[in-house]
Length: 454
Image (cartoon, rainbow, N blue to C red):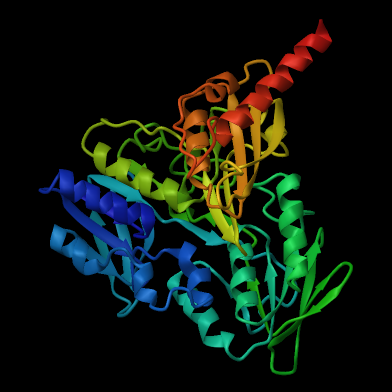
């Protein structure tokens, strides 16, 4: 069997390794248009901030490793077309311009995503950069020493991480976002208010609820300012972090997709064409909080889905368990974990929810030190099924987001979490773990509501 893989970052690398490990006689041909594979773009801010000194550490595989496993790697090759009837791909060698045709028995589409580039006047000015791949990371690094004022457009995880990296390196930083809060997809307002106040106290300018209307450049064509409807912000460099779109032009009209172009796959990573598999940022995912499909481009989703392609490439064996969009963030000393729905996002996903906010120290006060934990539990009205959760503390409680993720995946209720067995040891927690106490607060909230009805 011949398998052609298009794209080799997280999902593609995982798929190739699993295919060859479990089916070593399979012929695997990989087309990658960049000159590298498996780049951890989530480490770009760490690289920019100097935490990661050697960029080589942001790669967890390389063409040589995959070749040793038996794959044929076509680096710097851009796939130009896919013929799903003849089952062949046409690719161009970007070094020589030569075109080659390769037939396949199974096709793996792991083409990922690409940053959204809004059609804003002046966006082609010099020093307006993207932040996705290794080449873009190097472009940012090469300019960092020569600039003083940085404007980040987009207040999601990548934007916020870059804000921290540049501020820690002594730059003047402005963050612009069209929404009224940072990290809007991941945290509710009780959490973002704290973080926004902290950013302002550190001298970071927040221009929230403001859309960029144009970029102004100097006589050399280099960006000098970012203009919104209500303000103008000086800039030596601008980094766009406004989101991602699935990179699926090759399969448009050939497999089923969401309106935004994300490919729909079944539980075994098969598209509507049974000989074409897809994974990673190019795909929609099964979103467990509401049981529907959503576009959630995360590396964690990509590596899981890619691995499942390898498990199922010959025959359907291992089902996809879906995702809760679980994520973590370290920001200026705060450790933040989030999973599932926020209260603000629940209506978008068709759910009616209630939530409870709870604060407590993570371990007893008689210990030499402790830290407060701010927590939120989001649950479905009527069923009490847990559909979301957020935790934040100066102490590292982020693994608790993984616990809440498992609760969502397994359709646990607030009662299940309230009385589940967690260990007690004063070095780590209280006789009731803080997640137990969070769920107790939700149970008590529902008890009082029932009494009011009576």
